[in-house]
Every structure is written in structure tokens, then in C-alpha cells.
Length: 102
Image 1 (spheres, one colour):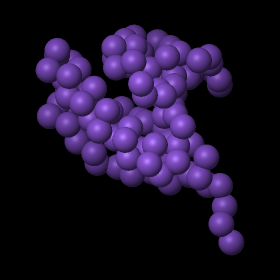
Image 2: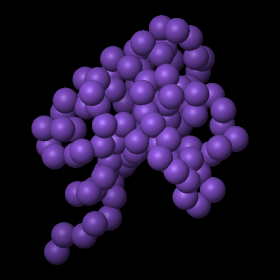
Image 3: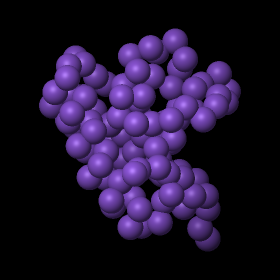
């Protein structure tokens, strides 16, 4: 019997970072468990990957991508702003971000 439990894909690797995707039938969440260094080229690479993935996510029916980040992690919160995520609130002590594409 199908459940609404989420699954997590690990190991999507950029040149200086890793991204995990957590998903179920109703949502998709990105996790950035590892960033080696943050440079302008890292930002461009993240934005390119996000734009590329967004086309796929829309095709399979998602209307937005979420991220939950510790408010004290200033670098991840800053990165999300730069790649066009919008802060939509907080929950359980975490900042909640959303990306809806263009």
C-alpha cells in the first residue's frame, strides 16, 4: 500500500558541493550537506543545476522546491537567496525556503 513517506537521493555532486533530494508524492526538498568552498563559479553552477532540475521537477508535477535551513547557517541562507529561493517562513526552528522557477 502506498504511503506518503519521503525518500532521499544522495550523491548529486557539483564541483565543490553535494546536494541531496528528499521527495514524496507531494513535495521535494533540497539538502546541501556539504559545501567545500563557495565562489562565484559555485553559485553559477548551483543556479545552472537548479534551472536544469526545475524543468524535470515541473514535468513530473511538482509546483515548487523547498529547503529547510538552520537560521544560524548564514552561508546556506545567503546561497538560497542568490539562486532565487524565497523565504516563506519558519518551522521547527528552521527557515523554510521555496523555489517556483520563472
